[in-house]
Image 1 (tube, rainbow, N blue to C red):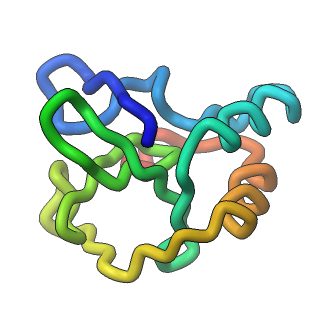
Image 2 (cartoon, helix red, strand yellow):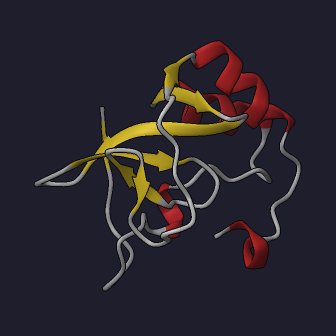
Amino acid sequence: MHRIKLAAGLNLASDGECFTPTLTPESKKKWIDGHDLFVANGRTFALVDTFNCVYFMDCITGSLYQFGECLTSTELKYTDFRRDNDRAAKILMAVQKVNHENAR
């Protein structure tokens, strides 16, 4: 499990914890190899913890989920997290860029 830092005053991961699609392929692979990855509804999540809680973190947006519910939105719910490092890695490696205005 990967320990993360939260964004200041928010219930989501700081930007530096998220997967960055513009990294080199080698850096992407290093990020992927350093996380336990899960897939739910075609999105990728990493199992992460802070000093006091365990979460599923959306790899791209940094949104945190606990018990299937997003901590920053009442709209987003995922309950069928499946551990699948290979499938998650393929999804992440295919991401080219992210529009963060629409991602969170």
